[in-house]
Structures are given as C-alpha cells and as structure tokens.
Image (tube, rainbow over all chains, first blue to last red):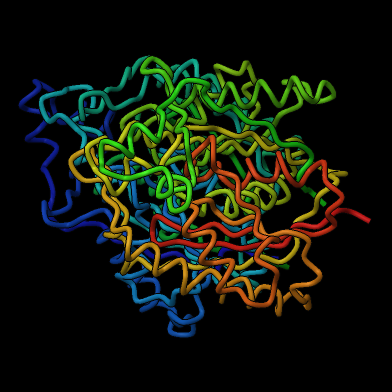
Length: 310
Length: 310
C-alpha cells in the first residue's frame, strides 16, 4: 500500500514583519497573535518562480532521504493555483526539468487551494496504484504573494509563501485511511482572483469553516469506526489562529489542545499548511493516528485519517 | 474495477470555415485537408465559459445514461488549462454548482493539455479507488479560442473548441489496461501562453510527436505482452492530419488504417480529441482492444491500452 514516507519543506527566510503590517492597519499585537496567529509572513524573492519553491522543497526531501534517487521518481503532482506560467504549460513539467528527473515521470498539476494536500494525497496514491508507479512526489506550492494586494486588510496579514514535498511509496510508515471530500461551487466567489488580485470574504469563509469542518471530521470518524479519543492529533488547515481555535472549540468531542496550531512564523501557506504540520509535529512523534482536514477555495474541503503502520 | 462506462460530448455548432481561414494565409484546400485535416473549427460563443462547455457535455452524458443520477456522482475531474477564472477557484467547483451535483462530490482540476485525457483516466480511476468513490465524471474542456491569436498562421488553422464527459464507475464495459507516461519540461517553451497569447513551435512539436509516440506505443505493447495485431485501433491525439499520418506511417508494426483520423469538423480539440474518437468510433464498435496516446503541452505524453470486459 502506498503511503507517506517522508515530508520536507521550503520556507523562505525573508518576509514581512506582521506586527509592522498590523500597525499599518491599526491592529495591535494581541490581534496579530490572537486572531491572525502569525508574527512573520515568509515571502519568496521576486525572481523566484513557483517551480523554484517546488524544487527547493524537493531538494530538501532528496537531501533528507539519500535512499530516494532522482532516477527512481516516476510520478509528480504539483498542487498549485499560482503556477509559473499563464495557464500552460503546467508547473509540474517545469519542475521535472529543474529537478533533473528522468523523462519517464508522469507529471501534472492539481488545481486546488487550501484543501489541496488532502486531495493530493489520494490523487497521487490512486494514480500511482492505477498506473503501476513506485515513487511519487506530492509537491505543494501556492505563493499567494503573487496575488495579494498588500493594501487589502482582509488578506495582507494572513498569507505566507512556502512549499512542501511529500515522498509517497510502498512500505511507508504512514498509511492513508478513510477520506471524505466535498465541494460547494455556490461559494466560489468568496475566494477568488479577479483582475490579478485575490479577494476573500473573510466572514463567509470563517462561517463556512466553522459549520463544515467539525461536522465533516465527525462524519469521518464515524465512517472510520473511530472515536475522537482514538485520534492523537488534529492537523487542520492553518487558515488563521481564529479559525483553528473556533473549529477546535466547536468540535466538542476532543480536547481543543489536540488541534495543533503552528503558523506563528509561516502564516496561512494554503496547501502547504497541513504538510508543514505533519513534517514538524507528526512524522517524528509517537502519534499512532492523526486526522487532517483542509478547506478553502472552491469552496472545497477534504478530511482524512492517517495512521502509523502496524 | 473502475472503468469507462459512457462518453458524451459537446461540440459548438458555430465556428470558423477553415478554407476561408486558409485563404487568408495563402493556403489552398489541399493543405487544409491534407496537412491540417479540419475544414471547420468549432468556436464557443463569447458568453460561454469553460464551465458551460463542461456542463453541456455532462448534460449530454446524463441524457444518454438515465441510470446515472446527479445525486450519485461523487467525483469530478475537469482537465483544462483554460478554466473559467484567473487561477482560482478551480473550474470543477463551478461545474459542481452549475450541474446541480451534491456538495458531497470530490472535485478538482487537472492541468494538462493534449495528454490530459490519458492521465485523467488513471487519475480519476485511482482517486476513486483510493477514496472509495463510486461514480466519477472525467470532463475535458480546453477552449483554445481563448488564447489563439487568429493572425498566427502556426495555430489559427488548427484548434477547435469542444468538451467531453466520461462516466467512470464499477461494472464498466471498457477497462483500463497498462499505461505509460512521460514528461520533458526542457520542451516547455515549445507550447506556451505568454502575454495571454498561445505560442507553438510547430516543427519542434511535430518532431517530438514523431520521435516519441511510435516508440512509446511500442514500449507499451511490449510491457502489456501484446503485438500490434492484438490492437484493433489506435486513437491518438488529433494534433493535425499531418501528425496522425506521420505517426501512423512511422509505427510500422500496424496498418496505418488502424490509426483513426477524425478531425474534419472539430480541429485539434486538445484533451477532448481522444474521448471524441472513443465516443464516435470505439464504444459502439466491435473492437476488443484499443490503444490511446496523447501528447503535447509540457511536453507531456501518455499512452494506455483500453480493453473490453470479458
């Protein structure tokens, strides 16, 4: 069974002091820490393309896993809605070349936002199993600095640039359990780009997350025959401190402390938020089982159970 | 095993007379028929969005398959590089709403060009099997009329707008056999959009197809333990009449007549070309086994064996 073997990431070291940004909008430290949750927002250099962020994350993965050779990679998905080019070609093709992968790699982009990592796990695992492939890279990189209007108080304090790379293959320590997905295009206008600028109706998105995510997690637990006590940690999309806190409080079945919150130095990194949590807090932990849940652009959501082998 | 249950399509009835276009570029009927292969290029209305083409193809699929209810659809992939919006949200979310599907549908876009249908078949089958889903729609819609410069003699005579919808599920008449995929980002610049206009280096793409596709088909047959005689028809991407003819001649193992050529009234419809062939020439045929091969933007290619059950 194909599962998660390793995760690495790339977070730009340069970026924006979010307290200084908050001051511009008349927001104090309490707001920045308590509601937004991020003191620092990483920003790619202007000369870094989305594919460069992907390459940096994948190179970190190769460095951390010398047993994974570039030659052995035969599948590559890039999850992004802010790729290198104007629609075509897909960023995954550019990453194939920049990484020095062979031309025998099956590569495509998946267009999803904050739900993209959960979808991507099942898309890559399923594609590899259907096509008989062995070593896949699931890369997330959605640099919202390309589309954020820094004068927009609704979004300028929220998003950070980052990329992650997940190695999927046989014999993995972490296996994918049940998953559940959903889509509501009637809310598409709440998160969209128009005139090259990102627009977010924060209140609608907050309400959507608060209504949808706890119920979705509960359905997933029931479908999996699990109770909240069986889950060691909940790694949900780090939309903002306020969203994570509100979802954790609303999901009354579990101690809110089980909802990992870690966005202080990253901000909302879109589809990279969940793999950043897994890399830092789960893979080297003693956890046996975690739940993940991504939600956002689309509107789209996806939740899944990940469990340690054996 | 999840396979192909049905395919429907939407081809706009309005469009461009390609002989008239040829005359603008000093090209005669022999060139238009013999090299390009298309007398007519369908064009969407300006007020039709990509999602509307998707919806038209999917509605034709529902009409042709009354046993497939909208409520039962739980997976949806849209293959496009010319979606509705500027990057986000994904077109599949908009299609979910316009089609009146439930919010329990897992939906995302796959960004690929002319290789997209072959990838999409394995991406949707694999995703459905990995996530436990039952009824999937694989929709292709890549209206190049959005990006074609009608003054560009290298591309203006080639591309037509169309969309297709493939129902994938259990108990399907057509099963997916072995597949093989490849990517070469070093050729990304040969097919790309820059400044909102599509650019193609036709000679490079022709040479790529002629070198890659026959060899790739041969490898796939060998990996499948098949001979060319075991394959009833070859449905390759309809890039142009010249490309299909040249690939058919170069693939010496099979009668060139086995390479189906049908683009007279459609043009090159990108990821829709192969499912259009399957709908019209394969699903209701007596064929037992066909090979499909898509190739283009990326550069990217994918080939697969499809075989009738039992």
